[in-house]
Length: 406
Image (tube, rainbow, N blue to C red; front, top):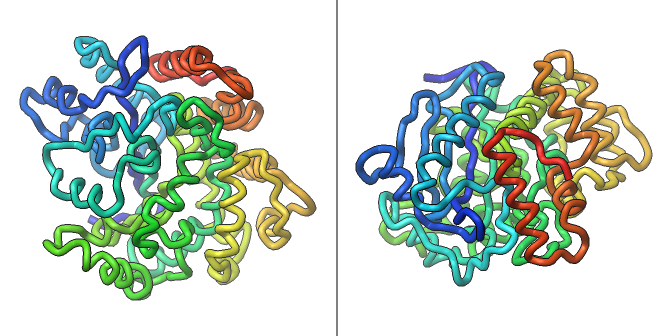
């Protein structure tokens, strides 16, 4: 079934399994799913939320079980599933850990691929890309799926998503630390995302999708080069181009949706869903041409948008945006931070946002991205002990569905 713009939504959240106490990753998602389902499976339907495995054996995904028109109750629904997962994991001395990167994991030594359903696909990915790096085995994100009905709606939605994409990590960055050290990037997940698939650059492109606004053009300019580039590696023809496309927003023509993938997972579903709501409300403004005409949105080349995104990946909400044409979209001038852009957009749409989401967003805009709050908590050259203390607090935030205060 096809839906119209903003009629329904799909949200996906990823979490890592860690040993309680030490917080070392624990690759037992198969045991979690087996305990819930009774037998080993890669997907468990739990009412309105579905649980499933990911590429690596220590990451579990929970997602809306089909499209939903109701965003307001999703935070509580995901939080309830978090508590249920944690209760099941207690037997194994394990719990869920939020944020988009594990601060102490050493992927070269600790990564284990999922060994069950779809393992043939994951093994092929590992053979091509070597999935032991942080970009494959130490990244957790939120995906937002937004529907479009036909080419006319795809054109509007794709234009809007492309234009907003560069500043989204300014709201959501939560991955500042790899292997016990500040990486220099507040969104280290997106920093490694850029070069994850350097062996086949057609898969990620410039992260910001190309200027394609019809199904036919998308297949010609994005899918065809991907399919051509993967041929020498995928000799058994088991990989699908929807699965291979790794841009920061991908068109899923198999379900008529655009999936936004540049959003780091937060400390709790309350924060994730509030961020999703703000992004969606701003996309509505762009689709409705309230900020800038559609033709002007389409005129932005991916290289120019990538330049902005690249800087935001480093400094998140503190990034100074100097591209005057981009600032003009939001009726701003001079050197303006990404945080100031988001504050202005929030003021524009806040009346359409529930009071609970509003207060969450006000907190984030006032106190900074989760990355900034983590860095304030651990200090400039943190010891492992200090890092563990902060991330134990984050695990508590996830269990209790509350915001992290540095």
